Image (cartoon, rainbow, N blue to C red):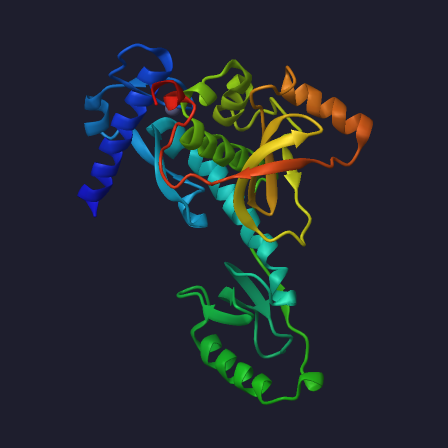
Length: 303
Ligand SMILES: [Zn+2]
């Protein structure tokens, strides 16, 4: 397991140096972090200064297809990734009522019984089935057996005679961090797909800056809440109208990134566009989500 991960990292180190060499026409031996732009030697790889980046984050089922430096991944990345994952879980609570979709999250359930306080549960919804698992060591010991009894009673009561349950959760997240988390995932998936010619393009500088300084509001209007009727998924594509851009769908949210031919100062343009036109209607041509580090723009010249 450990050595397998090391082999993947070694392979991605090699792919990264080859991609940047091809992009610049020079022999590059160091690996450059796509987010902060700092260079790292193979000694740094040995010393774990470079880390495997899961895209989307591992908690959302992503694959390790890029390397970033330990500062960009562990220090900064974790904060925004956790925020995005928590937000998705909380949004998933609504699927409890429609019994559609899948999610897991921790909730506090008040069953409206006088002799029974609220109970902490891991709640999972999968294929229309709702399951509760009591959280270990987070409940009074006698609650678990009382709860079991109550659930059994409920199951044998006709639906119309059941009393209401009240579900709340203690999970909290910073909505801005969650947005930056999505921006980060979108940027990294594009790095895996297109390589350094994309990541180090001057048009992406504000994006890299925003990802590193996740508390600051450097850019805005990169984020879109999608119509809930759209199937939550991970997809990407090139926006063809009303302007040129990259669009990444990350579950129920969308992120815009500048692309070749995007308007200059893209996010200022988007802000103005938004204020003048209101709701944004756009069309895009889907492109396959990368399964590995492809760096297609870097290698375009050498094939
Ligand atoms: Zn970095």
